[in-house]
Figure 1 (cartoon, rainbow, N blue to C red):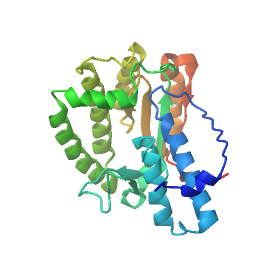
Figure 2 (cartoon, helix red, strand yellow; figure 1 turned 30 degrees about the vertical axis):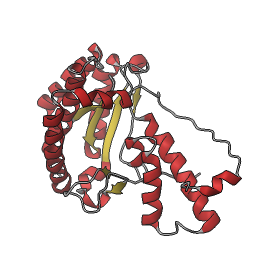
Figure 3 (cartoon, rainbow, N blue to C red; figure 1 turned 180 degrees about the horizontal axis):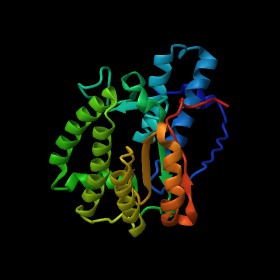
Length: 264
């Protein structure tokens, strides 16, 4: 039986748009697929009143969004979400994401993620193809074990507000991801020279100032700059003075932990 049988009686026109580049490794699928899933669940609830409970609504929206992408299933929640069954998070599932806002120390509820756009071009390998490459990767099993261990430590850092532990895990995970792509078959180099230059400057800035500023990467060349809201003015000055020169046309997307999707 179709998940939304009422759609067979309708003709719909879907129009969407993004304010940032797609297929560049910054999870543009998350916004589109989660928004579409939320719209469909809102339609069902208004027509039939079957999703009036917030938990039921969110889980169905997350389940549907996951059919589009893993990033999307986490994007129906505010602040933070966890996707994947794990004993570390009660109620977690492989089928949908669950809200994790209550597991965050207050310092992480005001966190910033400024995306340094190194290249807006389409990445050389899609996320789906990249995931498939792990099937034949000789480092796959150790990697899965490492990820599970790091996740447990990460959730501990989130609860305690341990910025140093959080930052180390974030950076190690980013570099591990790209290392795996480099040793896959065929191999891919997704970072660019400016990606490396930005990483080196971020590390040096952290060493010089003591500010808890960290980097991450998605499956592409663009750098995510992660830091608490308490130092936003200092970090934005650092971006303007030292980092923008390594970005395509000086493009930096300022972002931060949000209150979740809004219906318009």
